[in-house]
Amino acid sequence: MRFYKYAGNYRLTIGRYRLDKVAVSSELQNTFTRTWGEIYADTDAAVHVAGIAEVGEILLVVGTTNGTSTVFGGSGSITGAGTLDGFISKFDKETGHPYGASSSVESISRRIQSVDSGHDWIADMCSSPVDPDHIYIVGATGGRLAEVVDNDGKTGNVDAFVMKINVSTLNATWTRQLDAHSDDKTATLARGISCV
Image (cartoon, rainbow, N blue to C red; front, side, top):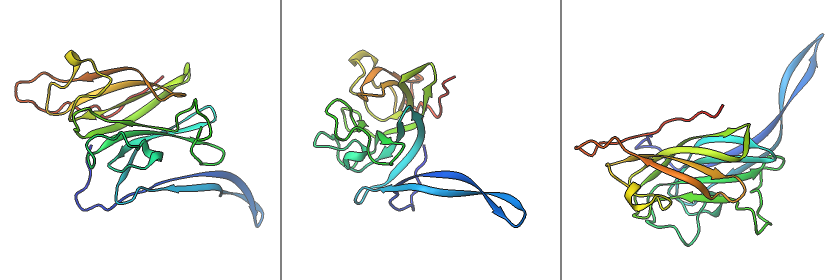
């Protein structure tokens, strides 16, 4: 995952567009009409989006941030303030507002972070049409993820990881942290995933 040195702070902008056919002279032309749009930002922090998926009435967005906004999984429990962490956020696909905000059962967002304050990135996600209750995410961590048992934790400089996430609770069903087990502590990265 590459973050450019001279880039500024980024925002998450999501919108819904409708495809309309409009008569122009004697022929029909396609036009896009915006039905809603929302901008989510974090003060003095960058938001890097890695993937988006539609699961039922939910729009799931995953990415990486060093911010603390609750829309990006931030709360008082963020370890290593200022480090990059992955996030999973849920939005209502009809309105663009955080999904489940009024529910005590649904989680609107979740932070993916290591217990030892390493940088954590989400590179991609996918949802399976045969298992709509879960998504899969891949990324890399410079630490040990909380969901990983001690003997399956950090072995390299940067380790890849794969997680299966419950869409309703955003809790990990399982997590695998992977490394090439080389002697020079090189990086192992996961850059993409496909659900078919």
